[in-house]
Amino acid sequence: MLPGMGKLATWLVFLVTVTANTAFAGDSPQISASSPVNGLPAVSADGKSFVRPVLVQPKGCSGIQTFIEVGTIGGPSTETKGDLMLVKDECGKAAASTDKNIEKINATLAAKAYASVGTTQTLALPADVVVPGGTFKVDASGSQANVGVEGSTTDRWSVTLECKVNEVRGWYVGKNAAGAGYVAIAVATGCTDTGSRGRERWVDFWPSGNTTSDGESTIDIAARWLAAVKAKDAKAIASSSSTPFWKVGFTPVSGKQAKKCKKLQKAKSDKQLRGVAACVALAGNLYTRFSGDQNYLSEIDMTEFPVELKKHKKKIAKLLKQNHKMVRYFLNDQGYYINVVFLLDPDTDYQTVSVVLESVELEDE
Image (spheres, helix red, strand yellow):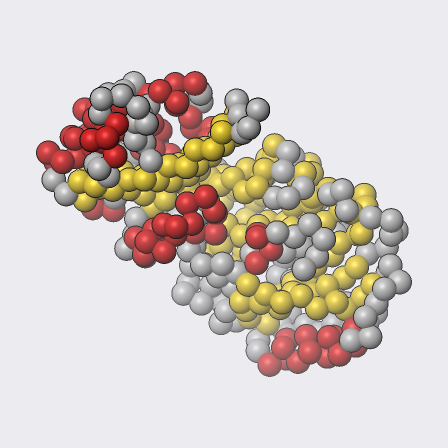
């Protein structure tokens, strides 16, 4: 694993730094010691595999270490995974297996119909990444990359990396084996363990393009549910929810109803839902501290599921396969670290919330 790579390493990879705009063409490229990234990145014709360059400038070295990642393409609810192999090192620490790694990579490229893909271009943030079918808006706040599809009310993502996000370096589009379309965007990050060229990461996004029948987005629906919680409006909470409903959190910790509400976590009928909603309303005080809810909401897939709620990950993944949609509320403010996950009900055309999971942590003073 490279310096600074964390849990996101399975689906975030690097891109070659090139100052000009380049579109690669041709099948089954081959690399060499003198041209270790020739024709890369490349994807297989069956949509299952990729071969992509991984470049990093370690701190204290004026050169670049070049790795190649060979992996399998994921999907909206599955991670992209790959293995890294060193093919060139300008920092004087090249492994003896470099030549063998190049041979293995070329054998992989030759075994399937791989096509060279990609555009490499440095863009200052905020940036517009124009791809067939749409424009991706890319911006950042510290180590958080924010991406949205122009004209879409649902396709918005926030991805937190381990280092400051500085600029866009490249992109390409493709489809996986199941035919799901994605766009991979490379962003440059500056870390304490890198030189000025830093580390370049690919981030894979899977647009849905979905809106609800009345034009409201999944973000709008989640924001409406939170607004009802802030207003302590049990009736509005219930009308913004649907059965079967279940939740984690949003339970009052004190008061006469605390003990009763602790038992009310699920609802199979409208009557039960009204009871659960009344308890949720009693737990709404915290959210009145914060404003601008839509700034903290984004539609996500399982690759961004909060680790704080990992106990429920398998159950949520199963619901996503049944066409539910997932929205995350993430906020780190005033000493609070809050994650809320909403699942929107496909049976109501995503106009109601059927599952809500809450995790709240308070920093020690």
